[in-house]
Image 1 (cartoon, one colour):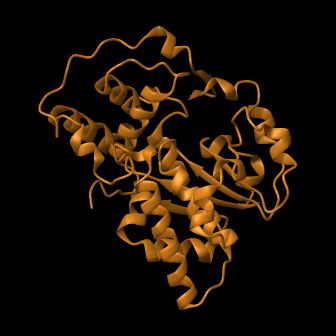
Image 2 (tube, rainbow, N blue to C red; image 1 turned 90 degrees about the vertical axis):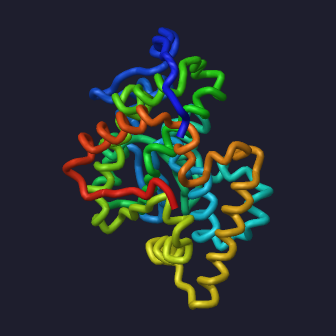
Length: 284
């Protein structure tokens, strides 16, 4: 861990203005005016939804889900724009009207908290894959993302950003509430709760569980082939320029957190997760 914590300047006012609140939760500005339409979004039984808090490994998960559900080749996935195949529900593009008319089976992503997702999902329609990532690695990746995104214009320090994360002051609301709410619904027949770290700890079980949930039948040899293809995707992602600073590895936080930051984070973590039996691996 880093040796000491630097002084933290106040957060720029223009950064604060990037958000708006809906039912007490901070959301990105492009969600404004469409939350009721999202709640009423029509689902199909063949839909596959991927839901995550931002920077929880969404890009990698979507490629694995696409590979397993569509029987795609990892080399083909590497050549295609996978984001076009899996639109984000609340993003301005392509928009709710276009997503609504996509041919089945639709693969749709969202970062919205459980409570704001379409009501039909709460009623058991369609399949929802939720993946959670340990919050220390996540906040490091989220900070790097905010620094690189022109529209956010974040110029504060990592220490300030981490405090904002711990105090639920970032887009998509509290990570602590986001993951715990889905954890509470993990036994729903249409919900599969996964952990990012399990991809690296036991990819075979991770893929087998995903295939079973998606109704993809395969024998031992076919499953081994799927696992090898998914491992290839992980290696491609880890070696890509997008992850040139190894944002995807488990234990990334140890290179960034100061000792005092880690102590403060652990205290907040225990306070906000004390009533949940959800646990995470912070290193492998």
